[in-house]
Image (cartoon, rainbow, N blue to C red; front, side, top):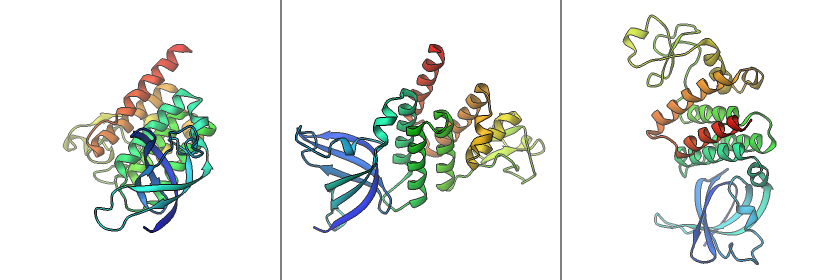
Length: 255
C-alpha cells in the first residue's frame, strides 16, 4: 500500500469499534478524505488529541489503489495549528466552527480545492484567536465559500441587468441585488436596506473595517441573507446554523 503525506483540517470524528475512530478531513492536496485512526481512543494513544475537530495536522496515510479502495489509514500525525482547544473555550466560536465544518463537508468533494482549504483554515484561525466577531467570521466564510464553489452573489450591481447599485432588493435565486426596474420581473424578492447590503459586500470582500463598524440589527439581517443563500444552493438548511442562531440568542439574553 502506498503512503501519502498531506496537510489536513479535521472536520469531524466518529467512533469505530472499541478503540478506533473515523475522521473526515479536508486535505490541502487531496480534497475531502475519510480515514481510520487505529487505537486512537486507548489511553496509551499519543495522537488522539491531535485529531480533534478543527485542528490542522500533517499526516501520513496508507491508501489502497482502485475505485473501491475504501478508507485510508492514518499512521503518523504532526500538529500544525492546534485550533481546537482555543475554539472550545468559547461556545459561540465553537458553534460557528461547527457550521464551517458542516458547510465544508457538504460543499467539497475528493478533488483538491486549495483556495477552499485556505478559506477554512483562515476562518478557524480567526475563531480561535478571536480576531473578529464569530458571526462575521462565519458569514464571511459562507459567502466566500459559496463564491469559490461558483455561486458568487453581487451586492452592488443588479444581478439581472447589471445596473450599478446600491439597490433596495435582493433575490437569492437570481444571485444578489435587484434594481427597482427589474423588480417586477424578478420574482421573489427580499427588501434590503443599504447598510445590510454594504455589510454583505464587506463580508464577501473581506473588508473587516467596514464589517465590524456595523450594529447588531444589521448583522442579524445580513446573517438571514447568508442563511437563505446557503439553504438555496445546498438545497437544505445546515443543522449547525440553527444551533448557532440559538447560541447567539442565548448569549444576547445572558448579557
